[in-house]
Amino acid sequence: MAWKDKLIIALDVSDADKALGIVDMLSESCDIFKVGFELFVTTGPSIVDKIHAKGKRVFLDLKFHDIPNTVSKAAVAAARLGVYMFNMHTSGGLDMMKRCRYDVAGFCEKNGVQKPKMIGVTVLTSLESEMLKNELCIQHTVKNQVKHLALLAQKAGLDGVVASPQEVALIKKSCGDNFLVVTPGIRPSWTLPDDQMRTATPRAALHDGADYIVMGRGILKQEDPVKAIELIALEILTA
Ligand code: C5P
Image 1 (cartoon, rainbow, N blue to C red):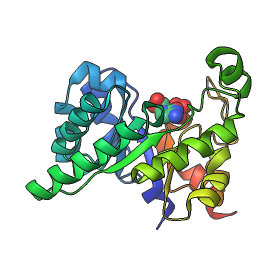
Image 2 (cartoon, helix red, strand yellow):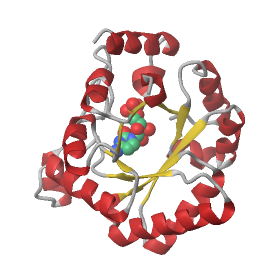
Image 3 (cartoon, rainbow, N blue to C red):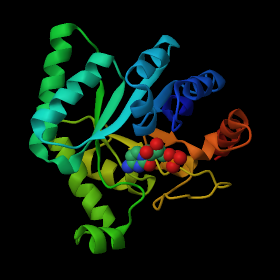
Image 4 (cartoon, rainbow, N blue to C red):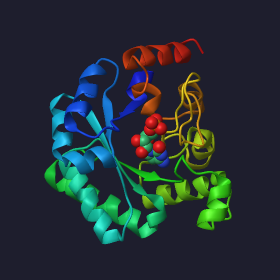
């Protein structure tokens, strides 16, 4: 797979015009666009249809986290929208994830719809071990916690997980090559980490086996985002 097929651009903007402007601007460079809280809450599901109308795929990043019944209903609604990928928090538990997988698979089979990739969020890339311990009372290191949650997601039958690029190798070793790893927290060498704690360059993440890299500010906050993608390509291809 060409590296650009692994690139997901985070549409972290506040309105549909801005988001669709980015889709048009990066149309040649990217095929999958991520719709997160800000954009979805502002525009509603119509933004997904509008991105699809441009021939692009959508990663619906709403990180569902609730009781199994509630999350499974939201998951089926996401499948009905025809998204390529959506996610839920693995810390919602095994039953929640299993129920989603079962209900979404049933819906897709009954309606002849392509099954979206179902991805579990492990530990947010903005957290590190001290924060887990002091704030969330989780005594595991981030790496152990990520591994534990990735195995739980696999047991539930999800297609993969979201984790930081620093945990890709560990997850692949624990869960096997076919279990997808989607990595935000990606920062080219010439950008700042912002609020992300566990970062890596696009090249390092892909080298470790990331199936998809999610990039927002590292591209969109640059003066020329198209040029930024070209620079990243150069960094990757000359590795
Ligand atoms: O701007 P930046 O590249 O840091 O954006 C990363 C994107 O990935 C954001 O939209 C953020 O919500 C999302 N994300 C994340 N960490 C996760 C899951 C999603 O940063 N664990």
